[in-house]
Length: 94
Ligand code: SF4
Image 1 (cartoon, rainbow, N blue to C red):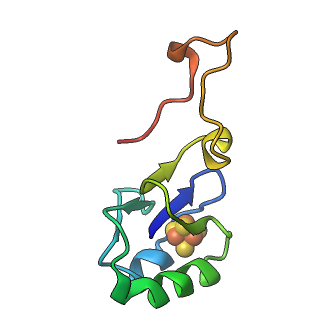
Image 2 (image 1 turned 180 degrees about the vertical axis):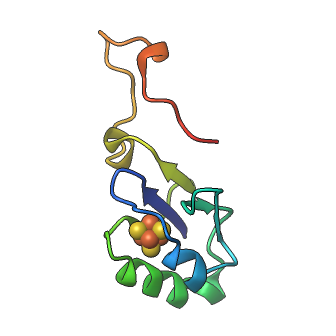
């Protein structure tokens, strides 16, 4: 399983990183960085982190780990619309 963070909802502060430091680090501003897949032995802790996120910004899924920096990416619709070139997209954080 993998964690995803909805960066449009996340307010930082890092409760999730305190609960699951094995797969969530914090950037310099206190926002979460998913560092890898959730190993099977940490799935219960990952579910707890999802439940306790005060902004409902965390979720577990089978897809690729990382941040979802745009609402369309959160919903899995991160294709560039025909009338929008890639240069005008909201930049992704590393
Ligand atoms: S617990 Fe939720 S709101 Fe807080 S840093 Fe983690 S994802 Fe963001």
